Length: 401
Image (cartoon, rainbow, N blue to C red; front, side):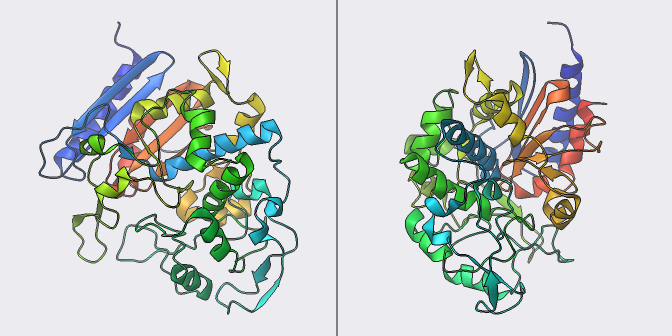
């Protein structure tokens, strides 16, 4: 096959990633770039610092928040079936969230509230405008946004072991108990008022399980994972495949050194979780995620079979936020918009001169976007969280150089 522009862009990007591995910014990664039937995959480095196991095309990764788009797509299959409506209140299936109270002030006591002006809807969960979510701040001694802010409602969620932020260590509660406990908290803001990250997907996972009458993983597998051939994707992996799961690393804000993260041990990923997190709980591979990416890029069709309607894909990949809501999410969104489970790039940026990309990252160190205008899919999977914050993502502009 002739040397193509995509191959040239992939080679430039691969070299940039290899240079980062050489500088010990991460032990390794797997990079995939696809355009139509042309696919380039390049493993780089090893699965652990000081280890000898090379990254491979079939390495299994914790994909973190790249779970969110899969959950959103599965939700839309329920909407198409009539099992859910985007504008319906969630109270029918989540009575724990009926008659919500809303804090007068985020830093106020939990009993200083007013009634919610309207119920939370299914679309509020998909767009992260349910009125509850993470509250980010920036500290000068850390490259990462922090959520350890001492507001009473955040402290209460921590005491209830809800794990509404980073997924490690895991919540010990099953979905029903988690929802019961979450329902004891007031909302932070009025439904529809503000974009707030993460919690909407935790709640949505419980809602989808109840609406479908199946455990969340069973529903995901029935509607998306099996039809797409995503055999390596799930909330756990067989024990005999544990050696395919890399170590997880992140720079410590205390020591300033890259350190292994062990709050959730590798062996725990061989057991189904008590609470399957629709926000950050899945494992996958680059080829499995390529199948999901192609489903969206092909506007809901996989190998001639329609799994999602065109309208569902349009809704997922359109920006639903107001300029004010985008501004409140800047620490996470960086000026991007938000659809259903994905960010949406509405302006030219350092990665592409052509807007229209959509996708999302995973906090363990995974990255994905589709670019419909260029028929392009890009996936990079590491298990080093710094990858998302140390300038690595700017290297993806080399695809257009």
